[in-house]
Amino acid sequence: MKENDRELASVARRYAGFSGLPEAAGKDIAQDALCIAWGAWGRELANADCGRRLAFVYVAMSYKAREEQRSRRRAGELHDPLDMVNLEEKEASYEDRHLARSALRVLADAMAELSDEERLILDLAIACVPRGQIAAQLGLTATNVTTKLHRAREKLRRSIGPDVLAELGIGRVRNPTGGAR
Image (tube, rainbow, N blue to C red; front, top):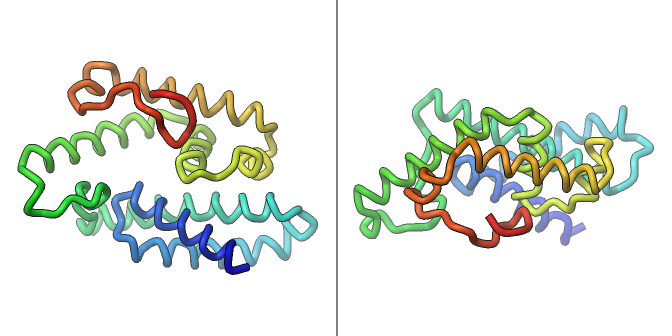
């Protein structure tokens, strides 16, 4: 159980970081997701295997992170995007801060163009959830998840465009969702 606790806490921290939330918000995201899952385990997941249950928790964390991000954005409480890459304030120039804010704005706009399913698959893949668990939760095959992930990444690339990617300093590098960008 302790190994799963560390894994869930790690995924929750990543969701918090990807959403521009403080690391401490990860604990709240994990706790809220587990509360949601606990109720579902007694109903629709009563006979589900462990992988499907864990995938359900990951999906709940994704939704809770988005909900928290929206709430904090409305209240003007979102953290500086540079916090996501652990830059000290004194190290970050005005240009760095502007670039980080621009990158998040461009990414948020591009993500908004994806379907809910594509966004969820991308979120879970970035959080290093195994594709088999993503497939189990969404009722797809692992091959379908891989295909949909590839298509979602291509949509993001097209939506953002090569000029913006170059301006943001994003080239062809390895990424956590597999493959080169």
